[in-house]
Picture: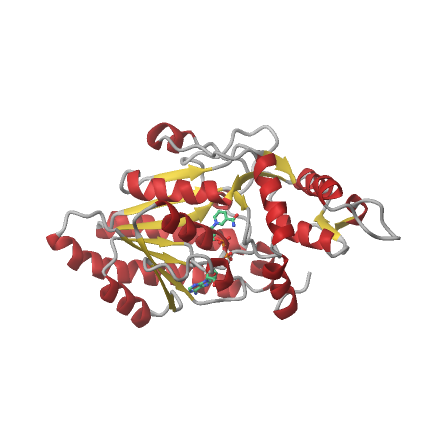
Length: 347
Ligand code: NAD
């Protein structure tokens, strides 16, 4: 099997490619524009594998995408390329609309042209698998039941609105043009190779650098957390076993406040790497509360019983185990994040 993964130099994409190369016989073509969020160092361990290939291209570029698809003749495409940071979408929505909406449109259009030709003499599925977020459903009150695949779309930020738009496009390409699609909506991921702007790596690295650990508002926002390798496993399960044109919600079943997550990291680091400073005795002292993000969603929670019941997938890592592995990874891979801090990102 040959699969195109877009956005494969990003956080989830690189973990997904590693999962495919290490656990399956499939070949992967990684298409990535290499934005600030990408890092080819995240794929160093598998980049020489004969089943892996990298192509630098923007998903909005029709000719480039068509050329790659028609040359490579893949069996499926998994679309993870996106602008993914909510704060950046508030500062500069434009690129979110270009990549997340127009980029997805371009991929759909190119894949449909290919599908029409390729499916004539083949009984392969030629799936367009679109990777999306639980943020398309908006947020929940404290006692609301978790999101299901039938929850109403109600996005709050330019990021989630652009992802919601792309989800609608994908479903419409299935309904109108008969393109075989799969859609997955996942909760917050965490794990190795996560760009330092996101909550968990930002907290770990800020602590290690003895910098303030900012928390929006009072930190009471609640999120469901999933270890990224469990997400990669879920995505591959859905691609292989998912029922065509269906949506599957993916979650970790670990709902926690942002403050709770940050405190767990500080407590872990206090033991694993006791603070060496005249000013501070514990990493907890670095926590500082900052003005809340506009339109900040209060709570996300995911009901993943459909993928569990129909495809037999469930997360393997508990939050505590996954968080421990993640913190240890950042402790042992300083060169990976130091290069980002030195070249193009300030905490
Ligand atoms: P990321 O920001 O770490 O990586 C995105 C990758 O896409 C980068 O390598 C970037 O260079 C690439 N990219 C961006 N614009 C591109 C373009 N125009 N053409 C080609 N490549 C481009 O994101 P992530 O956290 O790995 O998320 C991947 C996908 O999963 C996104 O679609 C996101 O919406 C979704 N998702 C993320 C989470 C999460 O917690 N991180 C949760 C659910 C869903």
